[in-house]
Length: 236
Length: 313
Image (cartoon, rainbow over all chains, first blue to last red):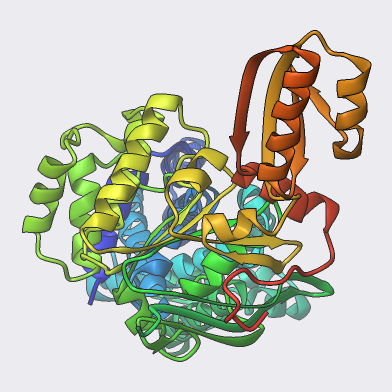
């Protein structure tokens, strides 16, 4: 398995790139702090803020890496090496998830400090955050490969990420919305992340029980990884 | 001798556009095979197909006996590729870049320090901080990390200053002396004149000529170029030159002649008769640049007879 050297290389090369720092670290933390300052008691927003952090951190990191690598042709270094497309995609997804875990852990620590009630289940919370980061990272890799011109990747990511913040129930509970709106949310991993973390942090869920939301995040991770491998096959 | 690289009717299409159109050639072990062509002729696409980076639309290709379509991993293990850009990781040092690639190829880590020493690379300097010459040298060294017998070099001296380009050319010769088979794409005529043992010229996706340098020279023009400067230029002498369509080049006149012996005999005969002074007289074969220009400009669509006589053109 050549996954570990690729992960180490990615962290050294892309951790401090402007795309990773601005959209992946600064935006989610400032966004969370803005809500904390505005509302004070942020228990009901905690699942959404942690999910938003994970979403932006993972997708920004993998997009930043793939934009650079596709433009500078360093991605072709990986393609020329005797490793499978699956291994390349797995490494990209794992390193994106690792970066996302770091950022969402910081967000969780800040949010936890301002929560009134104790965390309902730490093990489920950690599992939920892990699966969410994997699913978002895989989504980011897929979009970064599917967009033909790498310069446009960040724009397309925002076209997808920003609506997801609203359709997932991260800001306002899904119970307030009509069924068709909820149905839109169900096609993105963000909704499952918010619902899983709502249950693990607060002990209740709005629409989807953790019995479904957690495995569905794993399913989406695998689905986006398969789609990414297919994209690579089409591109090269 | 069994070919190290073999292309049979190799074709690449992008939608309606045919980038490479049914080309066939063989590269022998230990050879530097020059692949010449203008921009957009299909050089890079050919390298990408042979190195597994781009899928083949039609035809077959074998590298080191491995089918490029079906045995991609085996092909990758036996080739080193230097692309037309120095594509390594800017934030990693030279040593970190090479160590990373050694791990990807399962190459011994001792190779890293040996190559850094052999090619005098700044191990601890970040790749992004290197000059373009050092970047290209490092990129070539990176292709050697797993000791491949075959190297694909795609425009290795493009955008380099004269000194760096010369260093890279010396590196290529050194690697060839060590036994590497080298597939070199270029549109640099200095390289084409000095490095390859054999050359294929590709134009609009088709190979228009293939052979050794001297064989290619015979494909164009009327054999030998005669350059001279005489004083004074009499009408009689100019009438003698008329059938050869002389062209001025600086202070000299240049003619292309099929039979230089007969031409020079007549030339000296006229000198004796007219008594002009010969200030310069030289003969030269057409340069590869001239061959290249004739085959790629004036004959854009047609195919030329192959100089080697044996390839399936």
